[in-house]
Image (cartoon, rainbow, N blue to C red; front, side, top):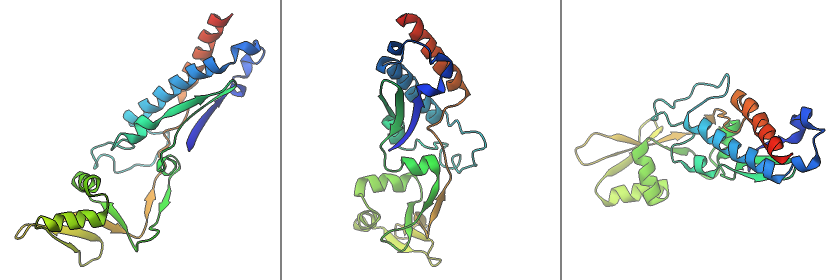
Length: 199
């Protein structure tokens, strides 16, 4: 699980407040805000400061939200002195931290060449399933001479790229779990409002 923790130690000016103030209900309020803040960062494509450029514009400008799974998976756990905001999606750490992806069982990574291929993958489940499905309806499917792509075409039609073949892929870090300047202003306000209601 990839997560962001907000601990009360960060709010040192409030340490002398009564213990009852720092409670799970307060952490729930902070958690609810941080979930919506994280979702805002994802949907707004708000990059962290000094973020590397990506190919988002070429891919319909939907960095981190192509399928919507990451966005809908953001949640929180509230405890008396901390709240943890995160997601349990298996691919979240590579999105948050960046890294290199290499094939485990195959010789190459088979990367869908676009939205049409991703749609076929959802339908058929695997690259092999996509190939078999296309061949079953009359398409030719073959590996390019350069061995860098899998192509397909109807008889007499122009070849189109189905999959891009790579030895490895470097994923830039796209930190979506982070506290930004807006959060640094709003979280203390949430605490202040909670304290005023509690005392």
